Image (cartoon, rainbow, N blue to C red):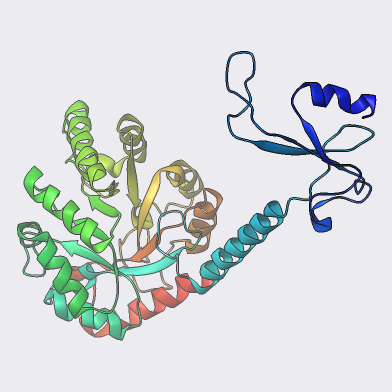
Amino acid sequence: MPRRLLSLDSLGWRAKSHFAPQCPDSEIAPGDQDLCHFYRPFAPHNASNPCRRHSCSIKFHPYTLQRPRVRHKLPRLAGSIVRNCRSRFRWRQVEGLGAGVQGSDAVFVSVSTRCFSELDFAEACHQIVELEFDRVEIWLDEESNHLKPSTVAANPELFASQFRDQNRIPAIAFDLAHDVSGEVFQGICRASKFLRVTQISVPSSPLGTPFNSEIDRLKELVRVAGEEGVRVSIRTERGKLSEDLHNAVELCEAVRGLGLTFDPSYYVNPATVDKVMDLIAPYTFHTHLRDSSVSDVQVQVGLGEVDFSMLVAVLRKVKYNRALSVELIPGRTDPEQRGLELRKLRMLIESLL
């Protein structure tokens, strides 16, 4: 036996055949056809011989004593699987199947049932479908006959089941008109989980409330909602601590996980609108949109001063991928013109997307 094989033989390896490949040609790279196949009948496992206990074999080149270059087909197969999965994911994004889901790149238009707060909740949803909206934000007000938060919290699973059976459009958010007790809020969070809603808007405390007390209240709301996988945001509105946007941003920074439901109707001053947009954009979780002027919080679409194109552009910079929700104030809307105003707002916002 040649000297080059003595070292292998001394280690317990024996030549099975000389200069004859022992593996299929499809698995051996060109240039490695002249191979010797060596095997080891038994390799005891101890401190001096860390080999495996069972018989094993290995292929060596007869001149270089190197293992052949085996072509592995698994990486190619794995690569094709990954490419296939990516193509499916892109197809789903194009079809809009991920719209409204956290992490999707699609911004969509929705409408609040507050626009029809004088109607029954089921009738309001019917009217929304007739106006060709495909997503709805649920307005909850204990002082109205529209839909009470206590009703939802009493049996969250039943409410979610009835909503899915009676409506063809999905809910994307809850909006609380007033502060509620901890038990009621927990029930609404459970209803959000059943409906796969990830957003709840709540009011901030009235002006004059101690800042630390408001922080403690909001921390508790965020904690309870976080257990059900729901985000909490405070509305920017007059007469509340969030009226001053600097205070609203400070609350978001003090309460981890808290965001803003931004309503641009109260901040249409041309001298400050740019700074306002840049200030609130990183903290915006949700929006309430209507056309308004400096002197009137709601006017007919096209007669106001809200720059919707600027709002969309600023939110796009911070990769906002959530709802642009239309909300008309009931007391300032003519019921005969309400449908027309909602259609105009929907078409205007969709044209900007």
